[in-house]
Image 1 (spheres, rainbow, N blue to C red):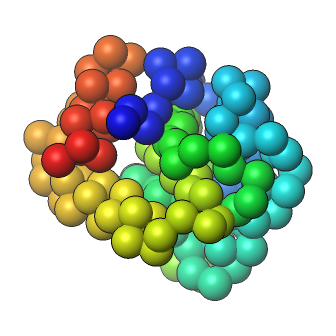
Image 2: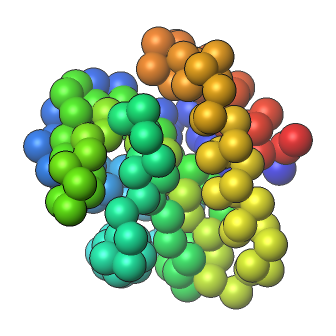
Length: 149
């Protein structure tokens, strides 16, 4: 099962806030047909962000949400033109974002596997380099292979 459409890899996002970035990625998921209510899913992701910011270091963010608006588990990747503050408390910035969308009724282990697989891979420089410097094809291949391993 693939989790990211090539159309859901966006480079040079010029948004200025975490909320704008999340909105951009959510709207892309809706545009390609992976979610059916962008405003509801956006609120679900922000609700999760209020619990704890999803910055994981090295300018990487993994916002995520489980929602009834999600038609199938999927990802959307964004490479920002410039970093934005992701955690207001620590002032940590993010420049590379992988939005994770999961079906609310899906088994919790699928949702957690998506998050943990990405977080584990992104601890290694060689994988982060794909997101920071790779082509859209490189990013597409990396994200789909990560989710299938």
